[in-house]
Length: 490
Ligand code: HEM
Image (cartoon, rainbow, N blue to C red; front, side, top):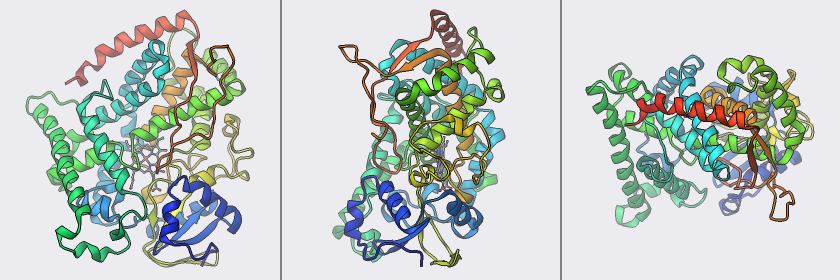
């Protein structure tokens, strides 16, 4: 077995719930790139370098891509319909196939116009109420995902009914996905107890009913629009049209759209994109003078002051691309590598035996902050991505995970992050906020949330337009965008 601490119990595991990625990093520093421990009764392997993660999760992907069993979140609450938590099998393969069809690079490029329009709204909002920057980023990320999924916009993340209902589900899921909270996760036989002895089941089933009601309602809205010929192109519409070809039930379609797009405890689409843009802003407040002038010089030379950057500028903006990569590396939002994997066969890695059924965690915190690959890892330094390095994988970082489970939303996500970083740096000066005495307020670049996704806690930052000319362009583009987005206002 790989080396690791001994005698770790489920009770101790529970105390790990706060930022376990730091503890995993310490274990990898102490024992090596592959560490073995027991989380409760489950053999668990923590991988702490990019090279080992690539060898295990990418090269051995056929046997390391399943998921551990999630009894409360997947089996009871979701009736096994949540693809993200599904073990590898026919259901998961079909789910992955439909996601691939709608989110591969070529299809994701067709969403660029929507991302561009929503980003124009974000820019305008930043000129009006810069202090609410976090709310604006979240609205952007939510609306893009909901337009792409259901063909309908989100204007207000606090009052949009669907977003509120989804938040309720998310909170419920977060509350039940705490390792060690439910005995049934380690003793599945408890599932056979009668209902009156299992109040936790009744609670989850009640939430399931609510989920089914609103997820089905969303699909029915799209169906109704299709009947009168008003449904814009969307993932949901595609699934309804291909229903027979894909052999999917209505409920499966409802879950595939809903559970794929909205924030789950693992925050598939929204929290990840919004959290990454927030990390970029934190980097601006923490390290701005070391990279913003160079970025703005590049933008001024390539784009100039008379228009906003577009997706067409991408190839001509190498330093902006480097900032995107450094953002995803510096503070990986899916800090534990997303949802853990499970091995489905015994195998040997560099002389170490990894038993079938092991939970495998690729600790992105340790992987991205490994000083061997990224010297001075906590410094935000886009320069590292200005030349190709010896690093496994297509992105030169590991933010989107591995193998057959690699993030299907990776192209949609990187397009969102690119267009907003390029535009924000083009239009605004981002500096440390100042207190009432005019002193700069320092930011804590380690102040992040707990949970499966880790995003910056609120922090102050000053966001001011670079010139009145930039504001005029932002206003003009905003007006045009409002007209063009009317199609998505139901
Ligand atoms: C910066 C943004 C994002 C990051 C960093 C990110 C990262 C990840 C990671 C690390 C995984 C786990 C991969 C693994 O298990 O090895 C994952 C899975 C997943 N992501 Fe993303 N993601 C992002 C955005 C998105 C978006 C925008 C969507 C959808 C629109 C999305 C949908 C999913 C889904 C459905 C899975 C589960 C795949 C499966 O279980 O087979 N993600 N993501």
